[in-house]
Image (tube, rainbow, N blue to C red; front, side):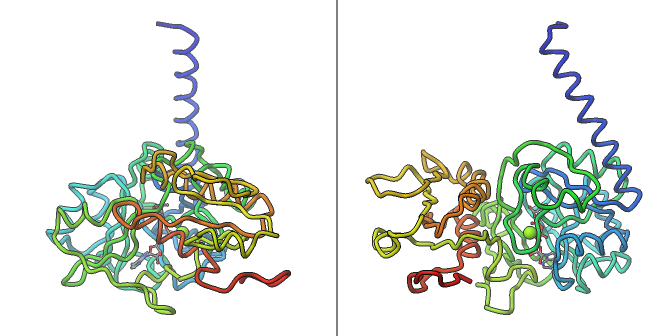
Length: 343
Ligand code: TXA
Ligand code: MG
């Protein structure tokens, strides 16, 4: 006991505790705090303070029709937010909270319309991250938080990502290191008769169906997304991404600087400017955790094009493919001609 390692661990814990207390004070005063969750970093404010919520939309340049998820630290917090709890909602909460599952239920009248974009429902989740839970508890209020990125861009999975894009517009960033899951929560709507998947994410659909039976999976229609924020082109980096790459894609762009986003270690010897491998052993969890950081790294290299490999759409693969589709500007389009804009 009392070795140098014990002391540095102790001081780190104290620093973390002080940072959470400081961040909670900011939330109480109506400020904005970026904080880590197990999925991605969120940009949080007191869910019952409309002025603070309005600032989230301003900072993110997010359209007001796109509602926010409200984060809670205990099931008791739900009393302030929803009118009732259907039995399948309770079963999902008992199984997956804290964790990467968001449920949509009918809201109480006093939940601000700005949070829910005027909908009669509210999206709720309890993050599986000690800093996030500590922040909500200390602030003493549920925290409304979208992902902490400018609207339309990739979600941040490290504090640096938030610092790079939003630091001068927000009040504090709680740094909890890299996010473990790496893709956003799964969203399930539970206020209609039949549960419906609104966004694939960190909990696999198969796992949810094993608890509550079959879930409706409506494909997103162009211009009419089921979760208002799920626009077809989203999570987009600046560099065009071409999904479903094969060797022919490469040949038709070979005079360009091309990066590869590979699921597993690629075989063969094509000359990419840079290759990012999501998981050497082809593990979905590892691939999801690396996805947004890998795209960000490729996006910072001034490439002409990123070719992305598809992954099988089972388990977490469904969420990975959903994000890749939304990030790709050019899927199934003809090859780029010199100087042509990809968007
Ligand atoms: O993992 C996550 O869910 C992260 C972390 C920070 O918790 N949050 C996140 O929030 O991804 P955001 O705002 O980037 O995405 C929330 C999605 C949006 O597509 C929004 O339209 C949908 O949730 N949503 C929110 N409230 C809704 C509601 N009442 N009905 C349907 N969709 C809703
Ligand atoms: Mg987002």
